[in-house]
Length: 623
Image 1: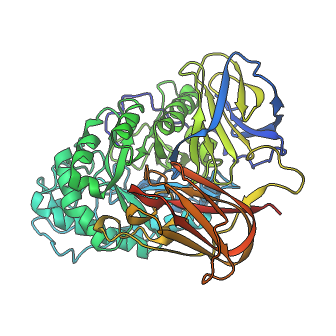
Image 2: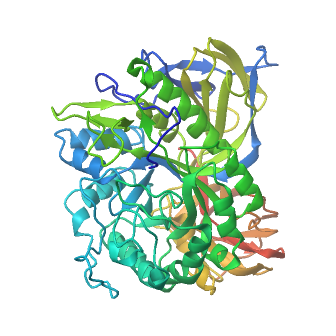
Image 3: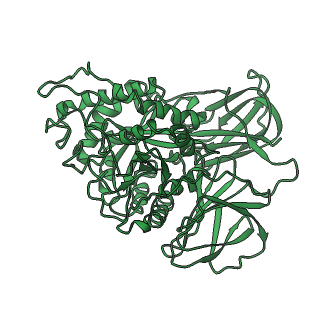
């Protein structure tokens, strides 16, 4: 985190621990809604179902949700188990309740992304890395490397988060390399010595392997937290854009690939006001080969620069990885200010500007904003006090309005928005086809508006500063006993005609298409051509209605043509049951009435792009 937080980034302490709202289902023709108000009278509170109506919109302000416009695939939403946060939660007598409220999709808010510091950050009880040696000594062979610091309380909580929500994605970022690798010889200040690029890359690999072996697979990593800021009172390290490009392309990327790890690298990991940095890294052809995208923080600039970076490199991902709340000068305003600022800039602003994930900062701090080496006015998602009490802050409800409803693998879809001072919004389509709309009234008075979708509409209103989440099921209301649901992917076996031989992408195996994480993928490894195939064994015959292929951030990697075969015997396929052309980023293949155990999707088109699948889902008639 940047030392001088000059924005109104506001956090909050809520008196009393409000329980997260239990999901209630609107009827098949209705819209479910949940509201949090600026005065805290409603906290993610479910509302009576609203009926869809036919006919034109009646309100002057109308949000038109357009599922035909699709954007990025969502990885997840969450915050960070800093050393301080983990320590507080682990030692709380309410540990289990806190973890449930944070990560359980039904009994809590279903957080699905965690950014983990690699070693100490400014919110740690001490300064450390995973290979500290006495001053004047070095350890180029990393014989003293150890994650023992994390074993008592950090790793158990990370494993527990994954147990509660198996769709949790882990990201990781270091604040400093070990002191002996740096020009300063200290954890504070300095930069990485060029002669230690390979050693530091090996350090990353050891960390990723150790965390994997401890039950915490890390999907995404950044080379350096806030590389253009050198704090004077906690670990940090400068790393120029050129140094980062050289480190990724010459050491880190090849080391991760040689180790057979599927962890992907994000560049930058710093504020919106410096988009030139990630652009410089991505323009480096060697670094770009190993760089999946870029990561941003909120402490300066505006979220719109994420779109500038996306437009320059549309095949690369965008993630939002850090924002801390801050107590307002008038602490009575902290909840309302935090709720508004973070919802409009992060939940709406970051995602409308291509962010696949939104991750806040500390999951927990104490009543003094610590333990900390730096910011004493920062706030966390929760406050865990020394007297044992726990409160859930504005950040909890900010995240809850999206993490509880928008699932990993969801796709952002089109919707118009009215800008600051009015009703702002963002919309998503979940893997099960349901729609989620998050709306925030950033104006000073109550706003009435309509929402339209698929020729239907509903009317509603929001008080000043309020946040609402609206959900409705897929398509038109199904007849009694109708509809469809996603098929459970546990037990599936998948295979493919090829996987990449290129060192950058050897982890793109068939299994990655069904691993529940849109940040990984299967890919052919070479240009699309007829005859390439992807095959699924369901383990037993199933009635099926459609196939949904997501290629996520791999822009242009949809199949230019496809033929689908179904069979009860993989040695005999017969004629194709359907054919067509794919679309970007989602290909939906409607199937005729079939029952099959085996499906094979065969490429029939040609393109210079690889064929990639980040997530594959099958649907069956609802029972």
